Length: 264
Image (cartoon, rainbow, N blue to C red):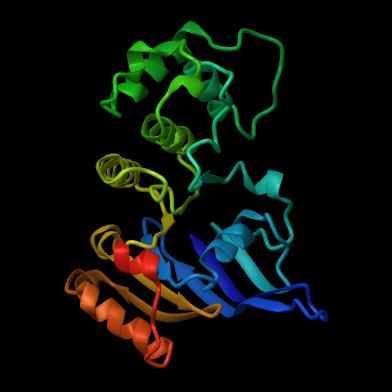
């Protein structure tokens, strides 16, 4: 479903602020893969997401999605093929619009727009059923402004909106990091349920090593712009947090220290 070949990215090339973010990254995801990505600060995790989404142009290499070369496609064209949920619950929704209006926007993403009712009766019925899946009571508040929702409710809604059209690829960039532990657990459970239920191909960046191990069927560890560890299936299920810490220490020559990951 996703094939990344020899992709590199350097920011501020040729200046004193030059930073090699990704170096010769190659990655192949099969349809239905749910990959968790873990790594220290500056490892290149979010940069990889942004290159796939088209936020930044790649310096070299190719990116194919479902057999189509999207390496040079602009971000707005890729948006019709991908769903994305960000770390900040305030992103991905329009605060001053109603819940049902936000869902209508998500439902029409990538399609031609015309003159007509913003939300039809049939759509309203569909949105009601979709929202019931979240178990948050939002199906009874469809005309409420999204800005009135809590961070967890808003992130759950964003996740639902990102998957309504069953995208070719779902990108989750630390989408539970800003939530309290109980709410984060609920959003993670919803994530697993939606990805499995719709057989989506997904990539999830996280700093939480327990979540990286328990969620999905494959785990990738990054360090200094490279993939240093790639494990899947039964081998992934047998991993422990101590195993990941050991891998990080090896990658950093025994000087591993990342408070955010250790606290997670």
